[in-house]
Length: 115
Image (cartoon, rainbow, N blue to C red; front, side):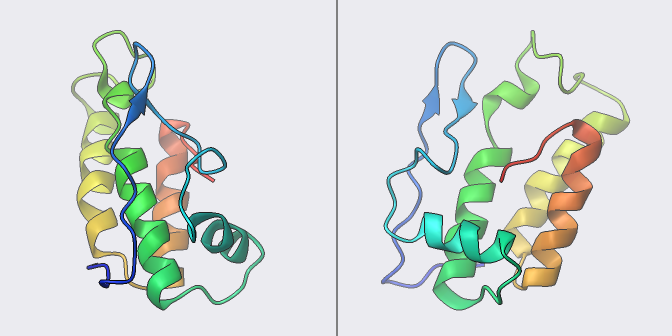
């Protein structure tokens, strides 16, 4: 999904020695909180708000911490590593609320819930 000229991108900054993603509540972005709250509340999130949410989740799933050599979350090979790779690729193609909900559900086997 491409963002429009009016949509500010999420900064790609990771926190601490394990390079964890910044939680959405702490990210300084003019539309992110509204996008997350709308999605969680079951509202129709589309257009610029969906683009912001997808951009944040792309940042979030791409965090080095999920594959850090000492991370307990995802081993370097095997089915969980394949799922992480799949999620990292698929988030870039999410273009509906339903696809986003499916993507979030698919992240749960990794023990990850970004919202």
